[in-house]
Length: 211
Image (cartoon, rainbow, N blue to C red):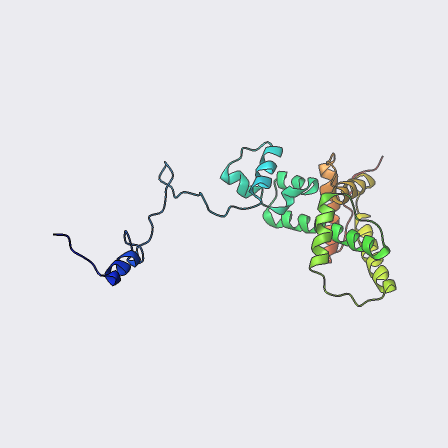
């Protein structure tokens, strides 16, 4: 005998959860063939392709370990890669990277103060964009901005004067124009002079014999 259900019972049956839905049961996560949780649908690091390209550019295999290593900011330019390739402790590398960033910041601000066009090197363009985005409103006059920027630039030039001519030229070419470094030792010598100046140390000559 077929049982007749009321319209209300049929309506409640249609709204009832199916297969445990709505009962607080979570969906079983999908897994890869190796048993690890599936990464499909997850948000991936948007810069992962850039990091893979860095690995290939430096002749490294694209592995999770190498991708983690090349995340350091200094791997993004020629000057920084010299620091990454050199054997030095983390504090020393951080000091020299700060010297690179300081040189770029000073030159960028000086260029802006005197109305020069932006530098062509990608590292300088990125720095300029970040400075503009995070800058607090500057209420100084044009004369004050030029004076302050010029003083900062002359200070860096003075620090670089404590190394030899070749090292000084190499630092400016590689750091400011992001060109391939052909004199790593000279670059490091020049950066150490800038680092000493930033720290307020008493500077001593770090150059090589001229001629």
